[in-house]
Image (tube, rainbow, N blue to C red; front, side, top):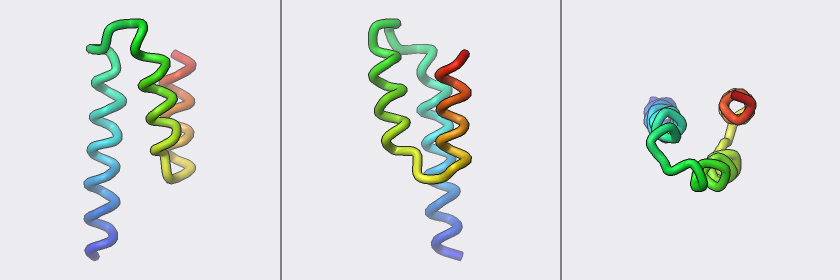
Length: 55
């Protein structure tokens, strides 16, 4: 149960960071996406970052 809670906390924080990209200055967004790609730990988070990056 604790591992699941840690994962959901991570997932919520990760998604919040993705959603906050729109508030960064445009020149900072590519580096922020690269950082998020490095922090992605599951296939789902990797695919989510890839999807956001294509938009």
